Amino acid sequence: MEQAVSPAEDVPEIVEAVSLLEKIAGNPYDYDSHIAYITLLRKLGNGEDLRQAREVFHSFFPLSEGTLPICCLLFLVGLFLADCRLNRFMAAMARR
Image (cartoon, rainbow, N blue to C red; front, side, top):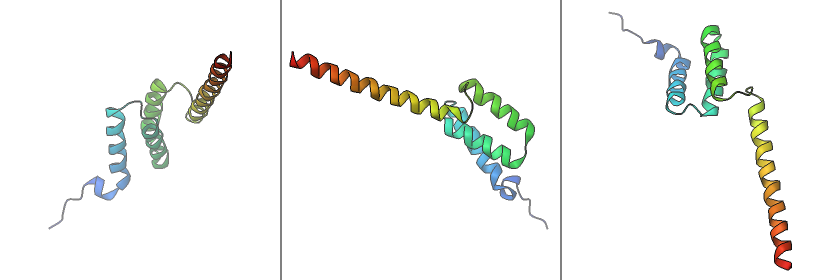
């Protein structure tokens, strides 16, 4: 008698893909889950799902997969510099 084997047991990547989709459905702004899912689909060679995943990704993150972290970093640097300028301004005002 043969035992039925689920596809998830055959291919651990399917379990990972389902888990990532659940994370994305629960929080569509989870950048890392989108990237992990796209990377996994690229590895699996699933062209249609990959295209759809990229479309969903771009609907939430209109920049490319590589430029968003750079933009976030630049934004944070800008905030830091603005805070430094504000602190210098406040210190100068306090001395007056």
